[in-house]
Each structure stands twice: as C-alpha cells, then as structure tokens.
Amino acid sequence: MRSDVAPPRRNLLRFLPLAVFIALAALFLSRLGGSDPSRVPPALIGRPVPVFDLPPLDGVMREGAPVPGLSTADFGSGKVTVVNVWASWCVPCRQEHPLLMQLAADPRIEVVGINYKDTPENARRFLGALGNPFARIGADEKGRAGIEWGVYGVPETFLVGADGAIRHKHIGPLTPQALDTLQSLASVKGDRS
Image (cartoon, rainbow, N blue to C red; front, side, top):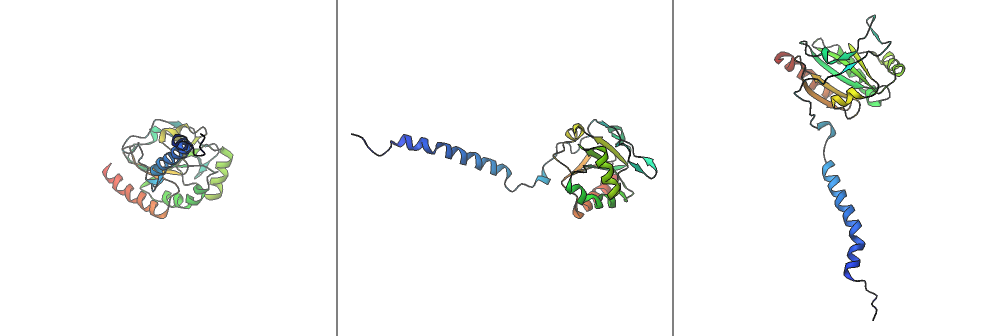
C-alpha cells in the first residue's frame, strides 16, 4: 500500500537548509544590528603609537619646504597630534578636508597625515586643489602602516597625546561635532600629558 503522504522525516529534511539559513542570518544580524561602526572599541587606545616609518609624499610642499614623512619617532615630544588616514580616491576624505584645514589652524594641535594606498600624483593633485593641512605626510602605498594603526577604511582620525599614546579614534569622515570632540580632548590631553 503506497501513500501520497511523505514520511515526517522527509518533510523535516526538506526544511533543514532553510532552518540553517534562518539561524545563520539571525546570528549575523544580531552581531550587526544596531551597532554604530564609529563606536568600534579600538584596541590601541591608551597604547603608544605603533612602530612604523613612512617616507614623505614626494613633491608635497608646505610654506616653501618639502613636507617630511612620518614615523613613530615623531610622537611623544610633548605636542598633541591628530593623525588623519586619507586618500585622494576617498570621497568622504574630500568632504572632511575643510575641517582638517580648520583643525590645522589650532596651535595646540599638530595635524599629520597617512596617505593610504594612493599614488603620489593623485595625492598631490588632491592637496593642490583643497589645501594641505598636514605638517607631515607618510606615504603608505601598500597599506602596511594602516594595518598597524588598526585602520578599517579611510578616512579615520586618531588623537595622539603629548606622551605618544593613542587617546581617541574617529572612524569615518570628521563632522563639526567630531572636530569639537578632538579639540576638547586635545585640551585635556595636552594638559594631562
């Protein structure tokens, strides 16, 4: 006697892939859901800047002199530093650039840059069109220094205390509120360090 009704076990096996997919999707969404990527806790906060040594971005001038490269030795000399990781191909970097120019005018802060996975020609063109807020620029053509700094993508901005320790990380383009936060922290960190 043959029945048109499939055994319960077969019905269960038909829905197993769907159940697995739903379970994985729920797990994935629970890890992402509602989280703000700019609030990712950076592992380097409170630690000294990573060890790195980047050559200068060829052909970039500031106040009539070539802009030097950037290395670990440039931190911890008693001045609060803002490190901006940027690239000419990065649209949000173009959007935040006026705020970096404004920040560079603050005498309490030295603004330096890491040019991330970019070509020197494009980076020079970018700075020529928008202005150069950077006292130093390290060319990170292969992205190795970005990895050491824990960069997720560009732009990212770090506040380094006068003691050479990373005090704050901002993921994404700077906003007026983020600029206020950096300047406020620079005052506190500058006094404390």
